[in-house]
Image 1: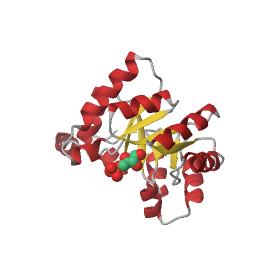
Image 2 (image 1 turned 30 degrees about the horizontal axis):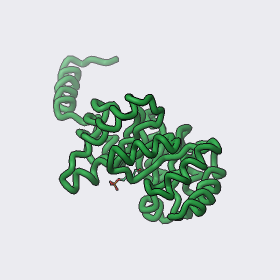
Image 3 (image 1 turned 45 degrees about the horizontal axis):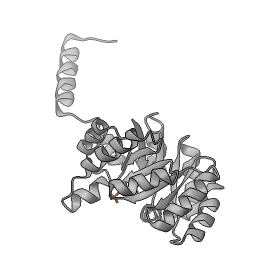
Image 4 (image 1 turned 180 degrees about the vertical axis):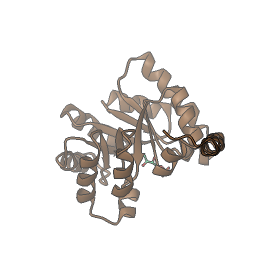
Length: 216
Ligand code: E4P
């Protein structure tokens, strides 16, 4: 399973990239706004920090505008993946950009039928938003399983990029459901390593080592 970090904070990305555990980055207009930096500048810097895909989202809502913004974003760096919303216009733009060889991440997916359309439009990634479904009492994980089954039934190679991940448990369930990628905030990635029994065990081992004067 690939791990993408969902942020536009270059400090956090650089720190996580050093671990070798990060395969890519996703951003969205809200995250870019939060960074307080110019769009193209921050995307370019992120592209230099990770070798894998860096999703950069268009803000146009018509096909022509999305294609034009998508081409502009794709020129920033080779590892840019153009992020397009799952609308009818977005699907048409996805077809055009994918045919030109640009990796497209179709975002704001909330149904299996939307995911089916994105795969048929040639998307490299589909982003189902788990947390936002959970927020309205719909099981986000069921959507991941449904998409997995549909893509496997027809051998679509669009990667399932589970998004809007809020907890470590989301990550485990996505892995069990066969998502190809999980994108999550830095805090969730770090929380994956935590376990109170690890802390307790380590404390006991270190105390015993100190008592016995063990040196390595
Ligand atoms: C993914 O590409 C999105 O940027 C992100 O996962 C949205 O998460 P949120 O629903 O927590 O804002």
